[in-house]
Amino acid sequence: MTAEKLILDGNRVAADIKETLLARINRLSEEGIVPCLATILVGEDPSSATYVRMKGNACKRLGIHSIRVDLPKNTSTSELVAAINKLNADPKVHGILLQHPVPNQIDERAAFEAISIEKDVDGVTTLGFAQNAFGFADFPSCTPAAIIAILDYYNIPIEGKHAVVIGRSPILGKPVSLMLLNKNATVTTCHSKTTNLEDMVRLGDIVVAAVGKPKFVQGDWIKPGAIVLDAGYNEGNIGDVDYDNCLKNASAITPVPAGVGPVTIAILLKHTVESAEKLA
Picture 1 (cartoon, rainbow, N blue to C red):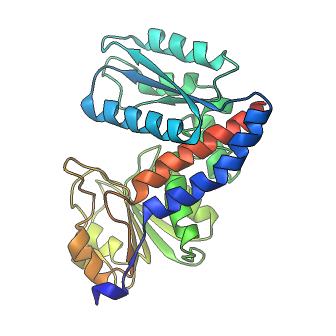
Picture 2 (cartoon, one colour):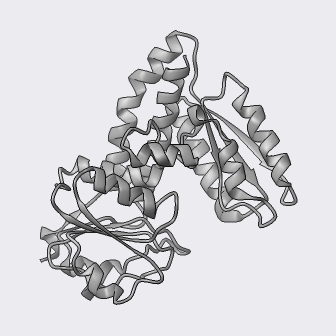
C-alpha cells in the first residue's frame, strides 16, 4: 500500500527552481550585477542562527551574494529599523530578510514594515500581504509560495478542491489560505479556537499543517486520498503531522525534513534574483 503513495520530494522541487535561476544569475553577472540577500539576525538563538547559515550557504552555492547583519540581543526597535533602512538605501542589496522571532523588546511588526516593498523578498510587510491577497504580489511569503510550488510541480489540482489550513500566522497560515483561494480552492482556515478541529480537517482534499506543534495532526483526521502538506518544523526534525499515520490515508504527503523547507529557501533565492532583475 505505501509504495503507491506519492512522497512530495521538496529537494527535487527546490533543485528544479534553482536550476532555472542559474542562467538568470549569469545574465545579471554579464551586466555587472550580483544578486544580494541581506539577512538580519538579532540575538543568538541557535535555531535562528542555523536557518541564517543555511540560507547563506544556499546563496553561495548559486552565486548569490549574502550579507549577514548580526545585532546584539538587547537591540532596540529603533536600532533595528535603522539597520534595515541602511540596507534599504544600499543599491547593491536586492533582498532583506529579518530572521524571526526577534527578542521581546522589539516591535516585530514595526521592523517588518521598515523593509522596502521592493526588497521584501520574504513577503512580511502588510503591503506585500495585501498584494498577495489580490493575487499580484511580486514576492509572496516564501513558505506559502513553496507550498503552491510543490502542488504545481506535481500537477496536483487545486481548483474546486476543499483546502483546510491549520494555522493563521500572517506569514504562513493566512497567506497560503489566500493563495489557495486565488487558485479557486474552497478554503477553511482553522486555528487554536476552532471547535471540532478534527472534523474540519477530515473535510480537506488538501490539508496544510502550519501550527508549530510536533505530530499535531493525527492519521485519522485525514480523509482517504487527501494531499497533506506539512509546513511545520520542530525540534528533532519532526513536522506538524504524525507522518507515518497520516501516510496511511493520504495519497500524497510532504516529509519532514526534505519537504516544504528546501523549497522555501529556493523561493527566497528566486525572489532575490527577481528583485535584482527589477532593480537592475
